Image: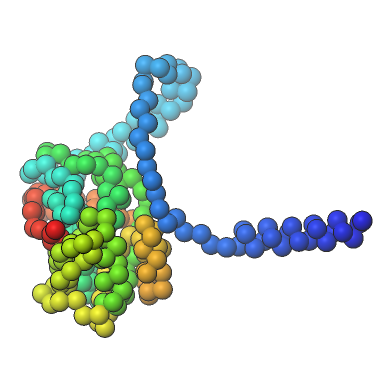
Length: 249
């Protein structure tokens, strides 16, 4: 009996080691909104007094004005002013991180967490609301045939945010007439893409990317946005809408 118990214990330890050593990646997020009525939860004065010093410092950081938007930018599919601006910033800022030319940048639709960016002052807090997750930018080498699969998945969901330099049509849930730059997609060519780590790791069922060569820049996407806005503001530039129809139906 003692030997049986010992064997069972060893088997259990082996199973535990295997399960703990396996690496998992988040593949999909499904969100749901819950309304919380403030009046239903009275303020705990003691807790509030503990939090207050930190809140003052946090508010100071988050309320810093870093830029200005000339018009309201709206999120939508298959292309929109907010998604165009967002991905163009990712392209411009990612290009500063590497020497090779980046062909395009993109962002999963659900990663942009606000429906619009209001006209007027843009604060650090605005960008945290827009991009609350600590996603980092990956630079990937993608063959044209993999990009076709990738864009087909995007098309099936109505389109994702893409930067300038990417154009395609959605027909019967697939990506047609894809152009990268000025040229049709070449299935044999290797393209350089700036992609969030969530997607590079197969998120939103983009498993076709898992075998592609990639480089982790270690830079938060949120920081790319903040740095871009600050730099442009220092040059006297504002955020302007771009209505380019990069993806059409």
